[in-house]
Amino acid sequence: MNHEEVLAVLPDNREEAVSIKEIAKAMGLEISSYIDWVRAERRLVRALGALKKWGWVAYDERQMKEGHKFWYNAYWKTELAK
Image (tube, rainbow, N blue to C red):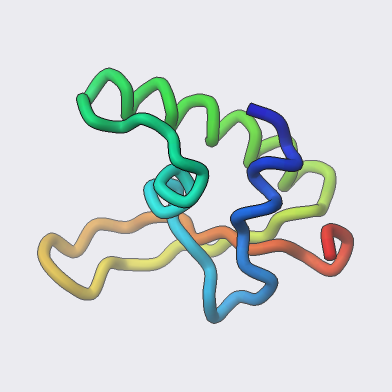
């Protein structure tokens, strides 16, 4: 997984920001079992961390509106990545 693949599926604005799970689905990553999901999530978190450090990706914490009220990070591209 490279940074270009991650940037390709990220939206351009904050209103359309997506979660790690949505990014994985858009990239077509295999997440059929729990262990597959853990592996995919770790790779995505590592890639998104580097992109945040370089200023290409921004994020904020949001709370789910449906079901359990868990908090998650939502990501989108910054002006540098456009």
